[in-house]
Each structure stands twice: as C-alpha cells, then as structure tokens.
Image 1: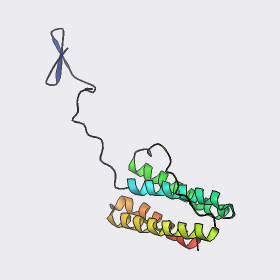
Image 2: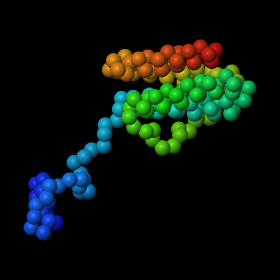
Image 3: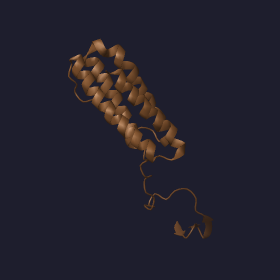
Image 4: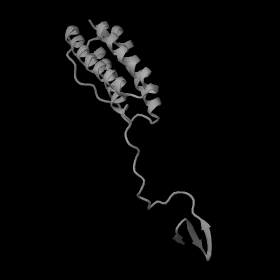
Length: 147
C-alpha cells in the first residue's frame, strides 16, 4: 500500500484515504481547560472533608454535606470542561483530630478555595461566570459554616 497525498494506491487503483494514520504525529493533545485546576481543587477539598470527618467523627454530620457539595462542584465543572476527571482520587492531607484544629484547617482551605473560585469567575467567559460565581459563593458559605 502506498500513500500519495490524500489517496492510497491499492493494487494500481487509487482510493481516498479515510480513518486515522497511526504514524501521524501532528495531532497534539487538547490544551488543558482553564477550569481544570478548580475542578481538581474541588475534588481535593472533598477528600479533605471526608478525611476530617473520619479524624473527628463528632464533626461528620456537619462536614459531610460540605464534602458532598464539593463533589457536586467537581462533577459540574467536569461536565462543563467536557472531559472526565483524571483517574484516582486526590489523597487528603492528614488532619489533626481535635475538632477545633480540624475546623481551622478546613476554614483556611475554604478561604483559599473561595479566592481561587472568585478569581476564576472574574477571568471566565460569560457562559461560565454564573457557575463559577455560585461555587465562590458556596465556598464563602462553607467558611461561615465552619465557624
């Protein structure tokens, strides 16, 4: 088989080339979406809340709904991005088991997450701003719920 331009010569007859060429290296992987870091952060926050609920069982009832909200945010961001999440779940950082220390650590993480979501909202195109604004607002609410 001989490839010539957009045709393949098969036994003396030329046929149009269709399909993919295994040796065509011109295709680059899609560029990462600007929302990728925010989606990853939402999954990491979910993991931190689940680990904190395990480390301080007295807080589990309070922390589980916030972990669930972070999971929902990650799923919606992934839907908007149009690509599945990378395989594996982020490992949660070890948490202190004293409830006050757990809450302080989570408040810091939420404040950083709120700042990141607000920044992403300000930089996003209009069709993504509403989602990002609601995530920033939810993270601000989480900070208050942890007081």
